[in-house]
Image (cartoon, rainbow, N blue to C red; front, side, top):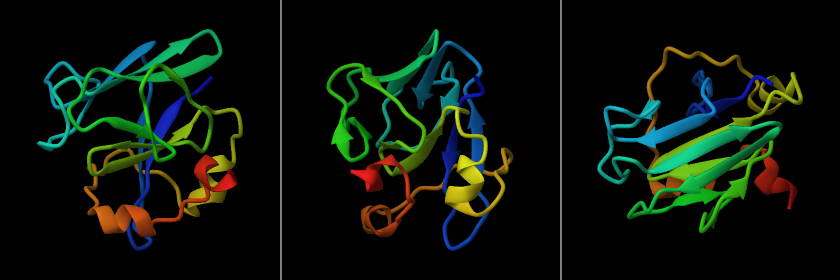
Length: 138
């Protein structure tokens, strides 16, 4: 299973692909995080993605501003599925569990570029961004 987070670009820009290469993947501002995001709205150890067998979950680690999946605050360990939208502070990521090889290209219309940097979106930009992920299926 090839698991990754995809960061959508703005205005047709390319996106960034972040491979989840460890069973416990830490996201936050801390220097020991697997995905380090430099933004004061994000805690040092903000949230953790855990891969166990064929299940992928996310848990908030007591962050001040919360972790959201499909616009719902994560209060306990939450299962992730391809197309889910994770919001951490002003940053938005799409989940790709690798169970649908063409999903990212179908949804985003562009190839992912792992060398680009994390985009910070204003709240109104987050609301306007329609990604066609799992949140839109509900």
